[in-house]
Every structure is written in C-alpha cells, then in structure tokens.
Length: 131
Image (cartoon, rainbow, N blue to C red):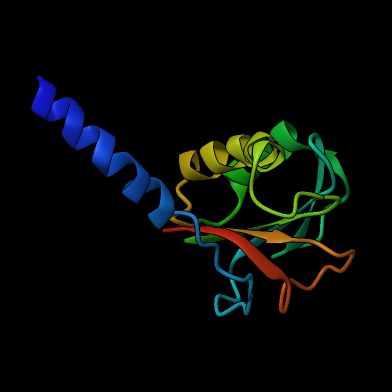
C-alpha cells in the first residue's frame, strides 16, 4: 500500500507536466466535398452551410432533420461566437450535444472549428477533431 502511494506521488507530477503543452491551432482544409457543414451560432441556434443551405434552426431540430440527409462520414461544426482562448467549459457545453447527435446519426469524422463570420470552413482554426 505504501509503495503504491509513493509511486503515485512520484508519477503524478510527471503525468501532469507531460500534458501541459498545447499545440497551435491548425487551419482546416476540407477534403470531403460531401461533408455536412453546420454553423453553430450560439448554444441553441444553428444553420446548415453544406451540402444544401438551410435557414436558422434550433440545434435539436436540425439534428432531427439531419436524419433525412444522405449518409456521409464527415461533419464539420463551425462554432461562431466562441470566446475561449483554450478549450474549456464553454467548448464542452457547446459541443457535447453536437458530438452525441452526430455520432448517433453515423458520422465518423467530426471536426469543430472556431468561426469568424464566414460560411467557408477552409482556413478556419481547428479546435478539435474526432475520428
């Protein structure tokens, strides 16, 4: 028991410091022309940018409508009005529902980008990417 505690005490600083480096944001370049691209305006409103443009909807309503879309592998969510300098509570709050909803619809590759008011995702900073 004491050896385990000592080992954990020594290992904890090493583990915490190894995760401390952050990588600079990578500019996104869309390679899947069939990807679902959604612009998330805030925590409740969104609009579809591609494959076909749709007007603003509630997030849950759009995910419900997305069931009728042709099945594709990639979904891109542009987070407009996202203000955190590093991923934190706001990111988790805004992306959790999207992640679960899109995975439930069969999307295997989900990408979250920091928006800047444009509909074209190319060149926007990548916040997170899930395969």
